[in-house]
Image (cartoon, rainbow, N blue to C red; front, side):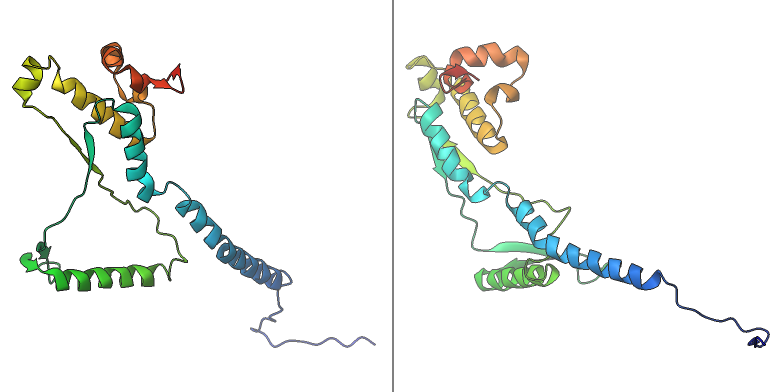
Length: 203
């Protein structure tokens, strides 16, 4: 005799799905894999160009490509007092205040603390962000513009063009020929041939 178990009407038997533990295990493995890959992705993202070496690279390019040695590295010193424009609320009018040295340090520390909290001390990468770096150099002339043109018989614009190409090729890491229009390439290469010669061969 076979005994059959009858269930009351309106009830549904709940049986564990055989694939549910497997899915949970796969999800946990994927999460663990993402946590393991996060430092590597961060290293790859931060393993690009070292921006602190750009001034050093630029100085080396100045010595190599500027025969007149008229380019000088420039130190940018910000003012001691800054102007801060902020809004207390979204719909309120912006206000402008003067920030001194001590307040600047407090705001800078607060900004780095917030950045450290958002990234979990650098464990999380920051995507869709841009970093602006300003590098300056000064073009020096011993004489005035008129004296340079008349006494030295030199076009100062050509020197400025050469200096601009040296800086641009260093910052963008591209050869000067790729930064010059084709119509102007022959003129600039005749005035500054050293820019278009790399290791003894035309760049």
